[in-house]
Length: 378
Image (tube, rainbow, N blue to C red; front, side, top):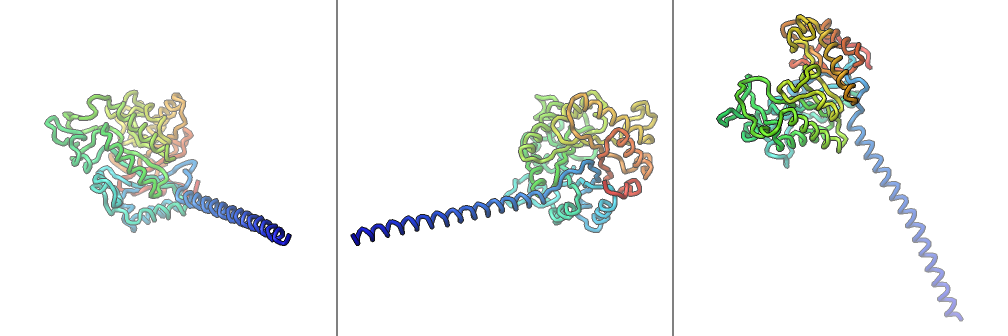
């Protein structure tokens, strides 16, 4: 009888212990689960802090890698951004000479290492500073004009008839746009720039060369039309960046919005619109031919030149049925005609009158007309 009671007590004790372990195990499990959820939420917040949302109306300026890497000069532009309506900046990540603005990682490809530089020290920190002040930061990546890559890959680049490397009138060489390895290189650079903290990727020089000797050979493009090559490249970039939720924009020749073909450079407006978030035609009045839209001298008619070209851009976009943002590059530099406050304001007004409030100002020297910019933030 006594032995039976002992066995009974042992059994009860066992159930109690199991219960205790179950209760504490459940509590521990829930605490662990809550801890994991909190960490995940923290990670998401940290990720969101790395990027900022694109402004409703992007109003930006271009900043070269040389300026971005020279703090005394860069600070002047940073102040301009903070005190005016400018809310975005386009910074060279890879420029039209093939140079990438920052060093390569140890495990980078040989092509990436060949293009590396120390032009912009602490670029990541500067991007964060801009983000802290709600400035949207766009990485400019110049594509097929690339003297560094082309010299190392002559078989995949534009050639003379004798097979040597072709150069344009500025003595710069180009990669054949159909070169798949180079396209992958551009994609890798785009992802690297985004991982660094850039909010958006802008591709420039997505075209065939326009000047220099006409006697040139495209060793890879020979079996394909130039228009289709450029279209397929943009689709390739779109598909791969969209999978990573990386915003994509492109800069194109200004006159393609009015021209009914690819202008001999592979850029056909309707081909490109569906595959980018924003398109930036470079509608600099100085670059339009005399007689465009019956204008005697488009460079002397900044309002009319911008108005007519953007009107075409809007019409053709709407006819295609896409909602791609049109974000024009506007002229803030002087060639045959001096461009100052009046001329810059006229271009912005022309865009505004058509319902386009986003714009980018271009000056290769990075000297911008502050008087043409509103002081208040929009």
